[in-house]
Structures are given as C-alpha cells and as structure tokens.
Image (cartoon, rainbow, N blue to C red; front, side, top):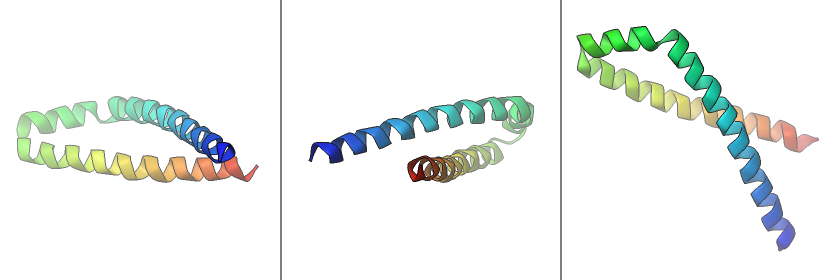
Length: 78
C-alpha cells in the first residue's frame, strides 16, 4: 500500500514540475508574440476578445495536458 502511495506522490510531483515548466514557457511565448495583437482586439471588439481568450485558455489546457502526459510517459519508460 505504501509503495502505491509513494508512486502516486512521485507521479504528482513529476506532473507538477512538468506543468510548471510548460506554463512558464507558454506564458513567455504568449507575452512575446501575442500581447500586442490581443490588446488591439481588446480595444476594438470585446466580444471577439472574449472568444479569443476562451480559445487560448482551452487550447492551453489541451496542449499542456497532452504534452505533460507524453513527457511523463517517456520518463516512466526508463
């Protein structure tokens, strides 16, 4: 039973580290490339901005989940 808990906590820790790194890279990427574009849309059309923000949030979630699962599986193969 303890080995199962230890494995689960290790997987959780690995997942959190991977998510942290990916979020940092994602945030820098969005801030570097999209900040002016998103700000201009915000000033021009709030409804379009709302849908764009929602799409970015959903896309980020799907992308981060897929990438982190792939990385975790590659780490566990070793």
